[in-house]
Length: 184
Image (tube, rainbow, N blue to C red; front, side):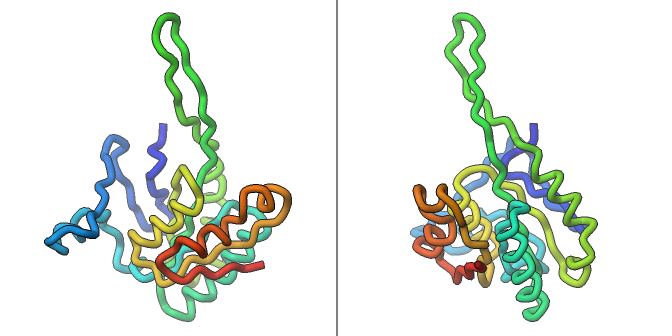
């Protein structure tokens, strides 16, 4: 099973981590700033200070991707495309043993990666596809922090889910530590 924090290599860039490696979290109160910087995952300098964009293949995320491509192209920076995969919690129960919850990936990231790899509109911008699992807002901000992104671009949420739970864009704008651009 693929690590939910694994980064999918696209366009000649490879960023992989062993599935059993835990990601250290930098302590912002640490006395030694170099120690905090070392605990961050290393990333290609072409993508540091790049543009993070949330992408799930929906129409609004396609518009956000188009905007983010233009932004990355104009600023001569890399594009970090983030897909937060749906994880389906499954209970496994074997007789007397207590139930175990297992994350089952939805494999949508692989399909999106193949579609993006074949897309002509990404030819002029260096890009990578990062797969995460979890809360969309948290994961987009986390990727933005890891890559020291200049901005996060997301599409607006429409429909009843956004009205009930709040839109991803709205929640992200409240908590993000960097500019959030919402594309309608």
